[in-house]
Amino acid sequence: MTREGVRRVLVEQYVFHEAKHHTDTVEGATEPVPTPVEAHALADIYKCLHQGEFGIGHSIEDSFKFAALLSAELLSAHPNAAEPILENVSPKGGVFRINLRPYRQRFLGRERSASGVLLEVCLNSATSHAGSGKDFIAALEWFRDLNDKGDLAIGERFYAFPSELLRLFLAQVKDFIETTGNIPVLSHSQVYKRYNAPSYRVVDRKTLERSDLAFLIQETK
Image (tube, rainbow, N blue to C red; front, side):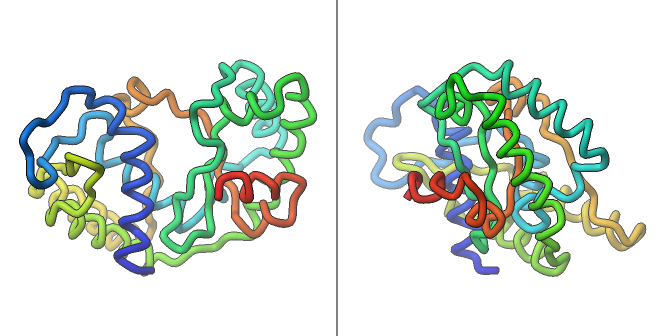
C-alpha cells in the first residue's frame, strides 16, 4: 500500500466520473485550481477503496440471485463504447470494476454467454480475495493527505472535499470500527448515482487473468 498507488486510483476515478461534469473552462491559471467535488460523496471514495482492498466478497450472499440480477442488468444496460470496460480500484492493482455498459457493447449479440462468463469470474473472485483492515485504513489516510494537499489534480483543476468534512467522516469510520469490530460497507451516494448511473461488477485481477476474459486486461493497457 503506497500513497502513489492510492493517488493513481483516485485520479482515475475523478477522470472517469468527476471531471466530465465540470465543463466550464479555467482561464489564466498557472497551476491547478481547487475545485469542489460535485459528482461524488465521501461514501463513493470510501466504497472505491473498500472494493479495492476487500474485493467482491461482501456482495454475494445468494449466488442464484446474484446471477439473475447480473443477467437482467446486463441485458438492460445501454451499450456504450465511450466508457472503459475495466477500472482499477486497487492501490495494489489487484481488483477491477467491470462496467456493464461497455461490456455489453463489447459482446453485443452475445450477451447471455457474456453474462455467464462474467458470472463465473465474479463467483471465483468472491473466494480468492481477502484484504487487510490495516491497509484499508492506511488507504483512507492517504486519501485524506492527497485531498488536503491538492494532489488529486487533472489538468487545470484539482478536486477536493472540505478538509473538516473528511476529517469528521474518517473519525466516524474509525469510531465505528473500534466500537463494533467491523469495517462498514457503504453504498453509492444518491449524487453519484444521479451523475454516473453506476452499473458494474467487481472482480479479482488474478481470477480475471485465469478466465476467458483475460484479454480485457491486455486491451486496456
